[in-house]
Length: 29
Image (cartoon, rainbow, N blue to C red; front, side, top):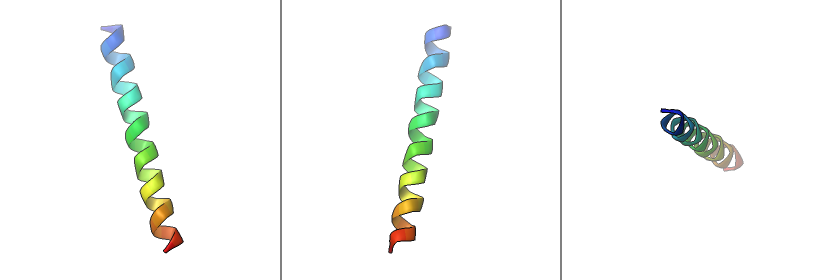
């Protein structure tokens, strides 16, 4: 149970970093 919660949060943080990267890339252009 705790491992699934940790996996979910790591995936959520990964998706947030991807969104920040995409937003930053669109701001550069």
